[in-house]
Image (cartoon, rainbow, N blue to C red; front, side, top):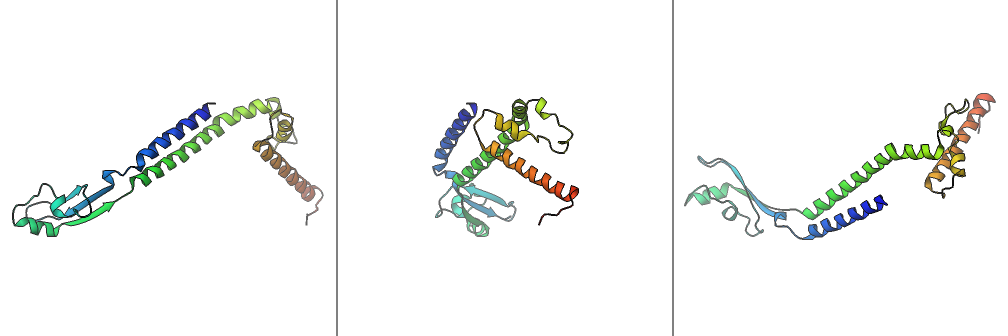
Length: 185
């Protein structure tokens, strides 16, 4: 019940964030002018949110560090570039990355905390004690316990069944090769 609530809350949060992301931001476009040192003035980088047609030294460099006729000489040395980025794509990518990371974290918590408790409850402590025949096979009787449980068949049951079938085949092959010295063809 709580996981359904968390999933719904996460979906609503993603929807709200995506709606805010679709609007074009003024920070998505900018003009960046890199001006090298000129006479006694240090080199600087200027950034302004202006359109492509206004991306030049005269519109971006504020305050102008030189006066009068030196303005043109100073601006000729500056290199201005128009930059455009998609903050919507960046935000969507980050949201997807964080949601995948969160799901993996939840899965890790499930595997480390909840699954051992569920196995203990499902198999019982007496079922987990190994006999001499099962020394190399922990949970060798898992299929029997799962098949007798009153839970509906699910993917875990199918996986456990396939795993037990594979283990029986490997055990048969070992007996054939090591005990009877017969190699399967």
